[in-house]
Image (cartoon, rainbow, N blue to C red; front, side, top):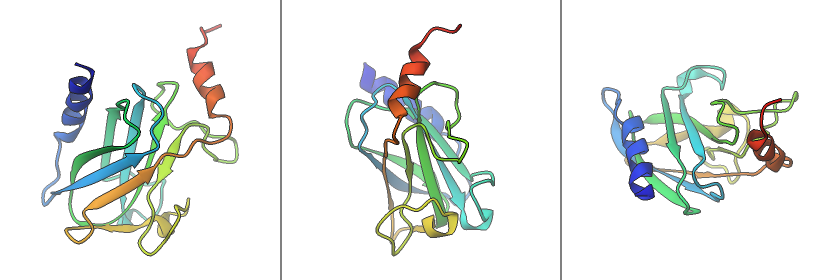
Length: 156
C-alpha cells in the first residue's frame, strides 16, 4: 500500500504536461529519508538563474529505496535542475544566512561537468532523446539532522 501511495503522489504531480513535452527519466540517489517530500524544479536556460520561475515542478513522497527512478515530461532543451528534501514540511528549502542549504538537496550536473555546481550556468544540461535521463544525488549538509529534530519538536 505504501508503494501505491508513492506512485499515486507522483501521478498526481505528473498530470500537468506542457505542449511538446516528451517523456524522460529522473533518477535520485542517496535517499535516506523515506516518507519525506522531495521537491524538484526544472529551470529552462532562458530563465537565466535560480530566482526565475521553473518550467516544471515535481513533488513526491520518497520511498524507502535509496535509488529511485521515475518519469517526467518536459519539452526537450537545456535545463538546470535542483531538488531538496523538505524535512520540516514547510514547502521551502531552509538555508543559512549565506544561502547554504540546511536540508538535504541535489543540483543536476551540467553537460561536460563531473560535479554539481551551485552556478546556474554550470548546471545547465541537455534533456532530449540523446540525453533522456537526469541524475540527482542527494547531499546531506552539516547540521541537517538538527532541522529534522527541530521539525519533530512541539511548538512553544
